[in-house]
Amino acid sequence: MSALATQVAARAAMLAAAGREGSARVIVVIQRKGGSGKSTLTVNLAAVSGESHPAPDPEGDAPVIALGIDPQGSMEQWARRVAAELLPFDYVVTKGRLGTLPELVRDPNVKRIWVDTPGFVDTDPDADSDADPLGDGRAADAMREALEHADLALVPITTEFLSKEPAEYTIEYVLKPRKIPFMVVINMWDAGADGKTHADLKKAEEWCIERGYPYAPRAVRKYKIHSNAAEKGETVIHYKEQGVGAKARNDIYSLALAVEQVL
Ligand SMILES: Nc1ncnc2c1ncn2[C@@H]1O[C@H](COP(=O)(O)OP(=O)(O)OP(=O)(O)O)[C@@H](O)[C@H]1O
Ligand SMILES: [Mg+2]
Image: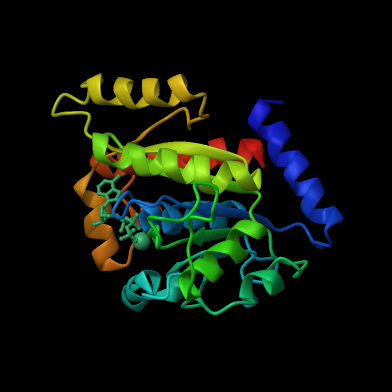
């Protein structure tokens, strides 16, 4: 078992001891920086996860849920474009309302809950350095609720330098104090026209290694098909199984597998 898998198992045992029933696992996608791919990764991972955890009753509720806790409802915008019957998962938009996640983790039919979170802002620059950086308000409370139930956090970083610092902040000030196991996901790697431009990827990997942060073994490459799909309300399971569609789809399947391996 990898070190991360051991931490996740310990976390699940802790949550069970604290009263969690059922076999649901909660994966929270979190990163302070906007636009790093939280929503994209959440819905695509939920889709792949939904394929491998089919509903026992095709008419009934799906055992895989994508949960959007953003009061701005970014997932709601996505959901409006999507044909729900084409999805192998259910999506739930709380708009920051509390109580939904604690209910879902008690449902014995639920297997995986993928939580999309909003970016967050440090509300008080003069607060003590050990203060909770999530701040006050509805979004902050929803975030705390999600983290309380999290088995694993995924922290997307892009290969641009900008998103790495907020990622470190998220890990050091939000995840580590709560002892939440985490995995960094390198997203939007531009592999270049030849598909072999590794310099940016190497830098991102080294950034993780220097800090001792576990990261998903395969990066998610930057493909226009992902942003186009979001506009059409599609996910990787709808992509063509050839050409760019196949490459883009493979990245997410590999990531889903890496996550399942530690759950
Ligand atoms: N691997 C990728 N390849 C191409 N485009 C991507 C990829 N990942 C995300 N995007 C695009 O980048 C933009 C930002 O992604 P997304 O909305 O998922 O980020 P986010 O972290 O949820 O942002 P926010 O904090 O604002 O909610 C979107 O237009 C999305 O389609
Ligand atoms: Mg988002």
